[in-house]
Length: 355
Image 1 (cartoon, rainbow, N blue to C red):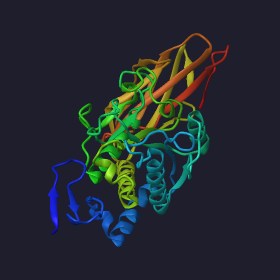
Image 2 (tube, rainbow, N blue to C red):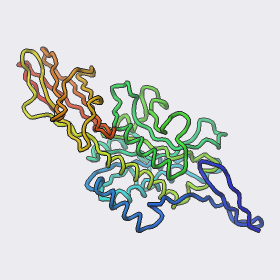
Image 3 (cartoon, one colour):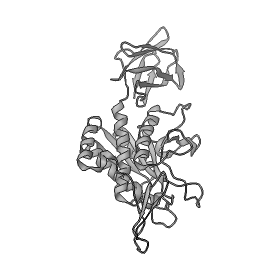
């Protein structure tokens, strides 16, 4: 006799028990995303997103592995390092099919030092770093907690905070949480978190030390008594990767402002440093989003809405090396990638800008 049990869970909608007298295991069911289930539709979706992804470079970081395989569920059947790797390799495949160049910290079960992951990313020439993990609660006996979350570095009032990281986290969180059927957790309204919540004032090493836009994805809790039923399912891992892929593609589709210094605009006149920058974006620039920092202090500026030009005038009478940072968002709410420059002023008060 067949029996069907329905469990009201954010993780698994339905469990089918094949037979009361059968030794067959409980099989977890999950929804197939409509744009993934049919191969033809999936390929078309990838082709549609390729216009935003093709030619771009990504660095993927499957967490743990090699000597670090200690993160497991209670019976040891789900090993986080292995699940991370499968999801990352599937994501790599989707991105490459969309025309991207993808670098990855490991393609097998091997040890990769924490600091090396950031070094490899910084040297790769990639423009986005995605570290893939699966979470665990603070208490070993907790097999209930389960949600999807994406981390960005620092907090909004910190100079180290880059709004674009938060933007990327939101897009990935929304689509990954959706395809998995998971909530975003009670500690955040949108499922994204600052890494300072875990390590106050410091954050995750791979986010702090990586110079390009970076996020860390905690797809789910591998310790959950429900989630563990499907994390070893390779088809489900592909669906997880699909959620991350869709989030990245939709983020890039929304665009981001480009910031470029106007040639010959950098000069010192009457002990004032003057410089101008062009902000461009197809959807337009949000004037209220613009911030200019000089030596970590926010400075006033003027903005020409018609031409998208930011002009800055700073009292400067002392030679030295100065840090410049500019952020701006487009009308879709996406912020520019990190724009950091060094300005060198020599003894003759002649300024020079360098990356």
